[in-house]
Length: 376
Image: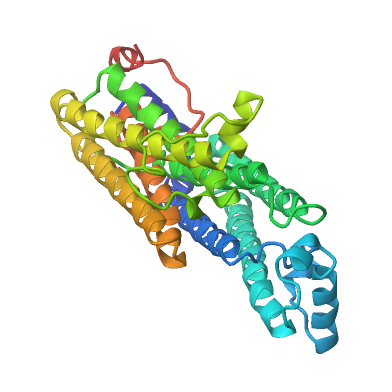
């Protein structure tokens, strides 16, 4: 066991060491809830339900309309926004209820996640089962969750005044923050897992694994822009776009940088190109890991990561060619987080290859010669 592992074990009480598996499973469960939340959010987007609730009431909003007059009042508020006037004018109250329930479920799921995190966290603190060095990381997760809720409402407000849908900038920000929280929870959970020791990998493998995590998050941002602009409803052919691999009109807007965020052609093209890059990088990384990582689970992780990345690209192509059917589109959205989870676990394993259990986040101790080699 490395010195940092020993330091972590010595500063933890027997009760805290015994609680580590529970905390790890709890954090993985929270990550699963975030994944489910993203899927529900995707369904809300695809059914164009996100603007059906025009008020943000974090507490009292947990209750849906309880009477016919309440439903009429909620419907009347929806009829005041541009989406109703320009897209859904003339819809019935029953039709409104359908989109309302999607958005209500999305918000209710957010409340559920908050409770599922807050209650066990308070219990762990009250019973002194959580180690001191882990507290800031858990507080950080809770704060990020609160910010995510506020960002969600900020996103909704962009579609209440002049637009008939939410801003693609805010949608992409909302999605990537959810994804970052998802990866954050997994990273902290992995720090509590007892793992078999594995060989220290060359620095290039660790660097590439970290790059893959960044590329996956960037691809999720581009996916949010595609969703926000409904770019998946255009150029529904593959591998060509409008009969060309590099379509016309990529830089038709001025200034040029605006095309990256607002030009439907450019946004979809960028999403495709980054998918190809991710497949190439994960494939080459898997080959390199097999030849350089030595003994341990790293080669298998790298192969699984590459395989799921290719599968995710296949789901993206199917989503496009089939006209964005909701089930395939949601599978594609879930696939993005599954790839992110695998990339996060793989990167953590390469960064912390020695010892079991791993040091808690924030643990510090004098490095052993082996750790100095790893860091260098």
